[in-house]
Image 1 (cartoon, helix red, strand yellow):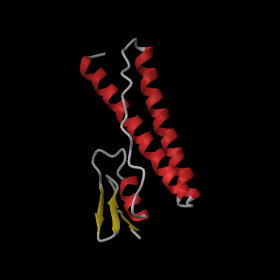
Image 2 (cartoon, helix red, strand yellow):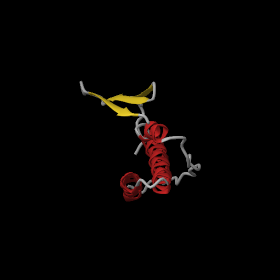
Image 3 (cartoon, rainbow, N blue to C red):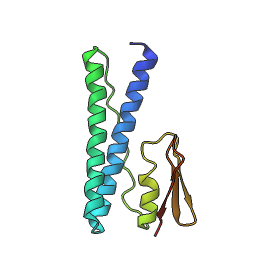
Length: 122
């Protein structure tokens, strides 16, 4: 494995852990605000990100490569509104950040799609 590839995989590992922390923080906030369906969904997203991290770790270990477990800073733990939360929820893990916040509404276009979706930001 090249040094650049190893470095890239270890950097991606950090992104997976950070996304997992962010989703878990959101799950906690949603539970505290009596939104159990959203909270459960976010907890599932957190678990998925950890699974992705474990796959990267397994890949590196199977190839006798050095795994660099990253330190992960604490994510935000509160939001002013469900709209503010929604804005962050749809940008985690997306390097292109295709979602835009406009006048209290979240608009987004998935890459490769002609559909634009709108969520009320209230």
